[in-house]
Image (cartoon, rainbow, N blue to C red; front, side, top):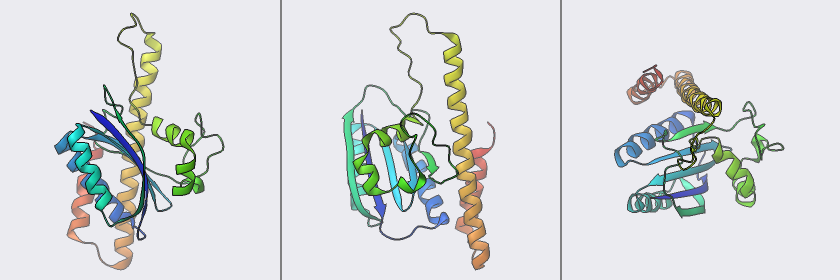
Length: 204
């Protein structure tokens, strides 16, 4: 398996509905190809990591690089991995805003306005810290016993990340509906996406 990460900018402004459609399509396609990863968006900038079978990821990268919706793309890393780092996510998602809590290791002085192509390309530790928010907990199987409390904490962190992701997608769907209602253009396609969103956030 391999993992690829990149940063890119959108060629044209993207609406909440377009972002929701992109996310839904990513999750559908990734699930079909056994691809996992995460996607962050803000200020017209994407930060994404994708992982899976080498040929599948390389083909996907070619598709992304040819997508006219990207104005410029910078490959941050392409590396072999022995295990998935985003195993729980067909595509974790978060939209960067000033409302976010960025008080995590490596992001002490990071602001939402810093989430842009030039800053991310020049600040590898910040990129790593942002991506670490979604990595699955790692437990070394060679170590005999792991403190049970630490395990519980890690599982709680993973559960909270899932809740946070659902809240992000739900908010995106609501914003899409609001924008469409203001224009008087609530399409069947948007309603279908919102129904899919509702289904995805229901407790299982």
